[in-house]
Length: 329
Ligand code: AR6
Image (tube, rainbow, N blue to C red; front, side):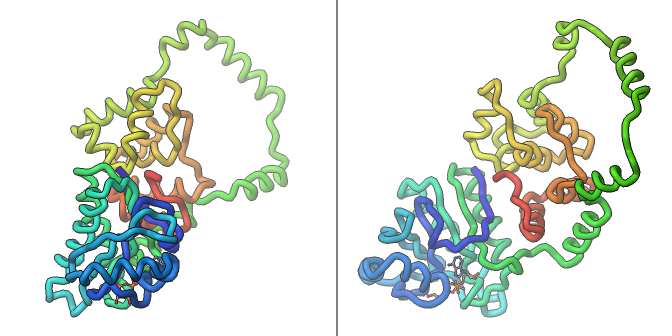
C-alpha cells in the first residue's frame, strides 16, 4: 500500500493515527508536539501523564481526543549529535515501533511528521531518507496507507543539480497550449479543403469491417500490464507496491472490465517497471492517454524515463518541488 508525501499540518489530517515527535517526558513541548497537544486539548496531556515517559526510539499510543484521528502515537526521535551516536538506528526504530503500534491497534491510515528534523536537528534530507526507506520497507510486508506530512519544501533531498536539470528540461520542452493556439491563429494556420479530401480518400482505402477492426484491437491495459510484468521478471505484488499503488486499485484494474486507471496510476506502473519511453507511451495508449508537452507533470516524468532514473521517491520529491501531484496518489 502506498506512502503519500503531502504538505499539510498533521493535526488536520483525517486518519486512524497521527504520530507525534515527542520528548522523553511525553508531557508536551514545542514544534509538532505543541501543535498536537493544542489541537487535541487538555485530555491528551492527562493521558500522557499516565504513560511514564518514553525511551528514545520507542513509541506509545493514546487516544486522539479533539483531533480528527482515533489515536496519537508518540515517539521520541534522537537528538542529532553529528550522526555517529547511533542516531540513524534510533530514528528507524521510531518509524518501526510506531508502525507496529498502529498495526496492533488496527490502524489502516497513519500520518507521520518528519521526526527529529526540527528542534532535534536531524538534517532534513537524511531524515526524509530514513523515513521513506523505513516506511516503504514496512509496507512491503504490511497493508497500510501512510502519509508523510512535510511542512517545508526545502526538506526535499533532491540535489540542486537534479532540480536545475529538470527545470531546464521543462524549459526546453514545455509548450504553453494557449501560446501555441495564438501563434497558429496569428500565422493564419488552417486546414484546406484538399487536406480533408485526401484524408477522406485515405479512409475509403483503409475501410474495413468493424468486426475486423475489433479483432485487431490491441490488448487492454490490464493484459498489457501483466505482459510487461512478466517481461520485466517481476511479480504482481512487487509491481503494484513499487508503483505506490494500493491493493484496491490493483484489484479494480484486474477485475473490473471497464475500470480506467488514471494517467497518474499508469505512469506509476511505468516507473515501477522501468519502462522505456516507447513502452510507456504504449502502456498509456491502451487507456487513451499520451504524454503531453503542455503538461509539466508529463515532462518531468519524461525527463526521468529518458535519463533512466526510476526511483519513485526521487521522482515524487521532484514533482513535489515543482508543485505537481505525486505518482501513485
Ligand atoms: N505538521 C507537520 N509537521 C510539522 C508541524 C505540523 N503541525 N509542526 C512542525 N512540523 P519538531 P523533533 C515539522 O521540532 O525535531 C518538541 O519540543 C517540523 O517542520 O516538532 O523531533 C518535542 O517536545 C519538522 O520538520 O520535532 C521535543 O522536545 C518536524 O515536524 C522536540 O521538539 C519535526 O520537528 C522534538 O524534536
